[in-house]
Length: 276
Ligand code: G3P
Ligand code: CA
Image (cartoon, rainbow, N blue to C red; front, top):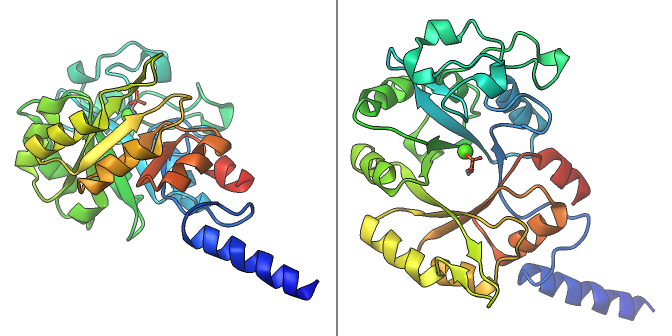
C-alpha cells in the first residue's frame, strides 16, 4: 500500500512538473491581471479597485483604460464619457481633471463606495507595489499623449519593465512603441472562433504582424471558447508573449494556465484563486 502511494505521488509530481495537470488545491501557476482593478467588488478603474486587488494578494498586475482630459492629464476610465460610472454625461476630452474630480464614480457600484473620485493614471501608478505590473490600455491617443505619458510616469518610481501598453488600435500601439520603446507593447485582438474550427486571425497571421511591428506580443479575447494548445505554442515558439482577457470562470482559467499563457486578465482574481 505504501509503495503504491509513493508511486502514485511520483506520477502526479512528474505530470505536474511537465504541466500536464494542475493539481486541485495547488497555487495557480499563472499570472492574474486585475481587469480595471478588482472590479467585481469595487468600482472599476478607481484607486479603491486597484488597492483592493493588491491587498487581496492574487494579482500579478492590474489593467486600466486611459483618456486624456481637456487640460492634458491622463485619467482612468473605460468609457470616453462619465455617463455610466457617474450618471452625468460628460465627455472626458471636454473637461479638466479638476472638473472630473467633482464627480462620484463609486456609488453606482455600491453605497459603500460613495464619494470615490476618478483617478489620474499617475495616482493609480502610486498603488503599484515594487514588483507590481500594469497594463495601460490606450483607447485613442494622438500627439498630445506623448507629453501626458511622460508626465504620468516621470518621477513616480515605477520602472518601464512594470508597464505594458495594450491597444486594439495598431496605429496607437505603433506610436507608443516609438515613443516609449523600453515598454512592452501587446496588441489586443478579439479572436473569432468559426464553425469550421478555424480561428481568425490565425496564430501565424498574428506572428507576422508582431514581427513587422516589433511588438512584444498579443493579448487575446477568447470569450467562452477554449484556446487550442497549438495556437499558444505557435506564438510562443516565434518568441512572442500571449496574454488572455477577460476570463472570470475558474475552470476556463485553469485550462489556459495549463497551456502556459503569459497572463490571464480577470475581474475576479480573488474568486478564481479561492476556487482553484
Ligand atoms: O484587457 C483587455 C480588455 O480590457 C479589453 O476590453 O473593453 O474591457 O477595455 P475592454
Ligand atoms: Ca480595457
